[in-house]
Length: 342
Image 1 (cartoon, rainbow, N blue to C red):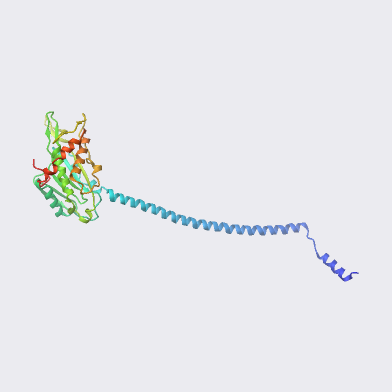
Image 2: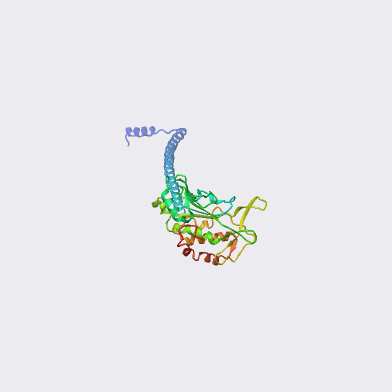
């Protein structure tokens, strides 16, 4: 039989297990859930904080990379611009020329204007070499009897004949930007119809002489040779469309040229109601911008003559231009200056 003391101990252990009321069980469960939720919230907050910090770092890196990319793109654009200016020039000098020969409207003679300039701007602080300018003008325009009319290498160097007048006589000007402008009055004839005409052969000889001097490197000593030798040149050639002529009543009126004489075969035909062209950009300027100094005189003369004839309404130019160029070089070989004899 079981011991009475053992029975009492078992009964006492059974009695020590106390059953809690239902409300206490639910409270304990709620506390447990809240603790878990709090832990979840803490974990979630840490995750959000990590995301925010990581996002900020990523954004900062992205901004740096974006800025670097923008800077790279900007740098590439600048390099492309510099490359374009290097190859194509900025046309600063040709557009900042003296501009004396671009109008001619109120003058008594038709005028040819030839302007030449380096395609790219010369370096800051550049000054003209006065002696080099004098040597070039004396050699190229020897027959014109030019004298120094004004000489300031920081402003302008100008040559005129001894008794010449600005705008009415042959004139050569050079300015510090590198622009050289040659103004040549043109004689004209009056046809049976009473209208003015020009001699294309005379115009071509003037242009050809200057172009031969440039082709031979005549301009390089005028400027810093190391820099100038890398420069290409821009050409602008124009011819005044009208002159101021006296009228029967004693006044003056504008008289355009209306015809051309040719040294050989002429163009096939001309537009019936064509006015003389008026251009400030120059004849054939698109093909005479940023060209090598070594461009042949024949090429320069051909481009100008063809553009001049086309803009004057002439068509069928091949034979005309071919005959115009025949013998130009041989004709000018013995000529010392820009104004050929005859």
